[in-house]
Image (tube, rainbow, N blue to C red; front, side, top):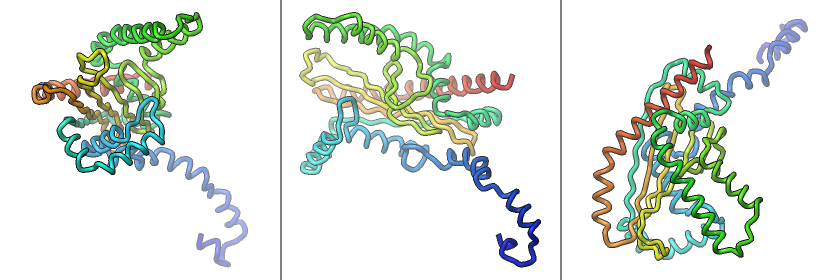
Amino acid sequence: INMLNTSTVTAAGRSFIASAWKPSQCLKNCTFKSHRYISRGALPGGFTKEGLEQFAIRHWEEGHGQGDTRASRRRRRAAANEDENENATTNNQDCKTYTDLFSQKISFECREWLDGHHDPSAAMGNAYFGSTSFLPERLLMTPAIAFMEKSRNKSQDDKGDGSSNGNSNSGENDTTRRQLTIPSSFHVNDSFLAWDVISKAPIELICEWKYPMTNDIGGSGSGNVIKGLTMMAFDAPLNRVYHGNCFRVDLNNSNKSMNIGLVEKLIPYHESYAKFLLDGMVNELEKQTSRSRV
């Protein structure tokens, strides 16, 4: 730049510098990948257990979900502010939250492949849910999800006027098929089995699941609900991928201590299984890397 401002630079020199200096091309080549290193997605503070738990609590406290609106969230926040002290005690008594985060190193070749991928978070989602480690869970959940969807659709038909047609049945089948098929891109609101995509960044994917543990078929609210988040992330500078989980047990009956004790006893098994799934995701990513190099 200083050379262009001096009188010693010849016209030929200026022409050479102008032809060689292409800012748009430099930005295209130099910053396309580096923005992924800087972007940490939705988690505050990067890929940490604390960040995942903060995101989960904020997500659940704001009441995100199907049918949720900005106005309803404002009403809930206003009600919470009016009764802050009481709610703080109630939440501590009626909820139990657990969070973990594990990481594993990947090969340099896998890091290069994943970093150059047009959608790294989708690649991780496909590797996680498509791995041989996840296969037993997938085989167990697939008929259960199909049965629940069929029961839900039948219940809705029974409540209606009974005038269901082929188009509605086709739509129901399409919904069930989407839930049983691994999404190709993992866009927000995509579903697979019990998971719904709630947040997506180039190097981070967060899915939510919910499982009702209840004997309250009538809907009086006396049962328990376990809801959780599953997170996958990629840190290129460290050659690492991450798998995190955060789940909360909402306790609404008299057996709180027993249920909390049961959850705490199951946590070591959950941690071992989470590491097993992380291994499966890494193995699948390494396989995809090898196939891409053939």
